[in-house]
Length: 102
Image (cartoon, rainbow, N blue to C red; front, side, top):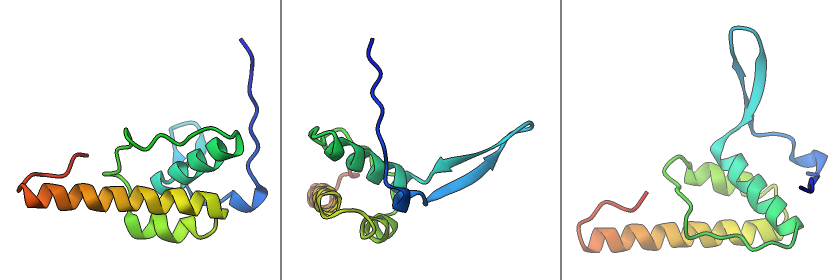
């Protein structure tokens, strides 16, 4: 088994919350930041970003847009595509009086 190391720019170390257990404290990325990091690292590896299986019900759209502005242009483009797909899905659900797939 090979190990793959990935590096994220120091400028992108933000967007996490401190959590605590009985014995330790740790930091965990907010859902919007985790999504953007995943896109960023996928693009850095030259990998496609599969959008068809994303579940976005934990994502705050305005926070995703705001956070996305701090990422490179390629990440912002994929973020816009995600938001467009989400919007179209919601519109289709409204047309047929269904709940959006989440």
